[in-house]
Image (cartoon, rainbow, N blue to C red; front, top):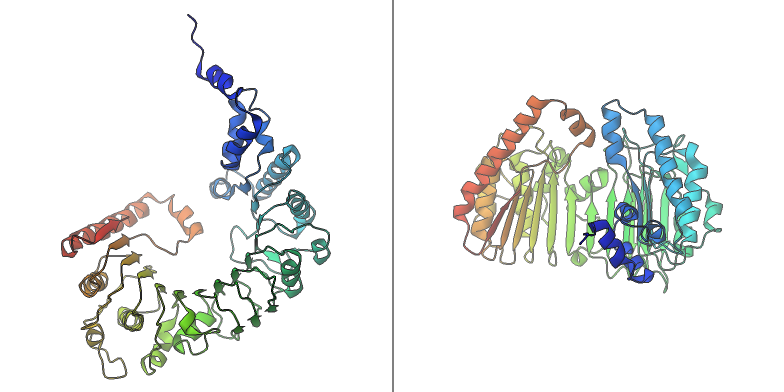
Length: 474
């Protein structure tokens, strides 16, 4: 008897499945996976064109490798990317899509094609729209080259079903943002990154405002942010990404935001100001915080201000993430960690991120540096109990004395600790530098050896853990 090959068998089976079920299956795949199904059989050949999931046009990783190796010209790669997106959109036949995502370094010279993509997504009743046009080799785009979203375009689009909007290196102003909030009644997530024309923003909520997550990153000209009556707002993220001593920090004020409980303050003058003034100018009540992520970059230069003030109490904080840059030494770092731990009686999870570009030379909890109110680091930690702490993560762990002393202190003081995660990799990777390093085998070997030694030191500490605590070494 002649045996059917697997493709014939699959074709025979799939021919008996109704198209609506096959389309539903496709919608659960990624766009590239859905496109690959076209080779399975004749029935699948055009079915992927009815894909209604996420049209994700992110080919940046492959493009970077080709560009770094000199195998592809940047302008040629831009052209190839635009042609790829356009080809898919012309073929697409589904009446709706869940998400549209474009991620490539495009600028104002591509305005017409970018606007055609936005119009396509709106016509397909998109729910999540993301345009990430961030530069390939630099941090931000100048006003002269960035793509400017035409304000009149908002009035021409039907975005009634949009729930998430993320714009990176797309120039918008307050008028644009308020227009989106007005034209998108279901909008729950709004992220604006690298918009040089965003200088002020005042969001006044009403009964219909659904906004839950607000994110403003790398908008260096932003001078004033006011939010009031956003009663569904649950999280706020803000980061300048650059530190400029001459720049005045943004003024922020939040009022009537009862659900706001998660805050992220990344690198920049505002996070430094919050740390050095001990959150006296936090734009909303500190008692609302259940999750806080803070980058303490350059805190070392203002640490004396922290040491001579009474540390606030984070009575409801459950999740804390602290990032430490190169400028802060172990004594200062240890004090800040200790003060935060002592002030957070309900803390469940602690995440510590270290930029380990420079080897650490000092030690935690052993150096007798004054804390300003008569305590030393060692006294600060002595007798502390973290009854609610269940999970700790060390990211950028190097396993030297500073790390091991803190590790030991936490497992002794946290009686309910369930999990400790140790990851020696840099939590602040420089993608451009990493690509360059790939061509230097000796450097790669040295980095790998250092990380392996750090992992071994973490495993050596496993004996100190209670049977109820799990150690995960990445």
